Image (cartoon, helix red, strand yellow):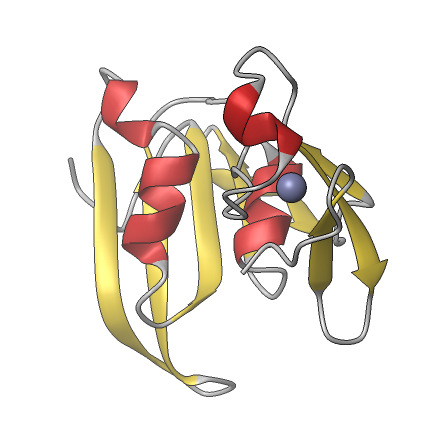
Length: 138
Ligand code: ZN
């Protein structure tokens, strides 16, 4: 793949430097059959350094997961080699089954079938808490 010219696909830009692999893992990009390019430490005017992920297919990116990991990233949708849409991310109010509670006494540790739900409790500091035990997500 020529990484500069995606015909139909997605470019996740302005990723905080060092977060590309985490995003790759959480979005399940290893399961894709198409070309995926990860560019690390690309020069950025705004951030100094940034990571970029290019996906050579019209993969349906889970915006909520992406926003949870890196709310400053931008998603560019490319169709016929042209930028057709630029999506800004917004912190999701709730994330379901993305991360697990680390509190060993949390009910989700013993009740394996429970859904893992975290709620945004502090927007400014991007704090998510487990809805069962109120432990912080990170
Ligand atoms: Zn919990």
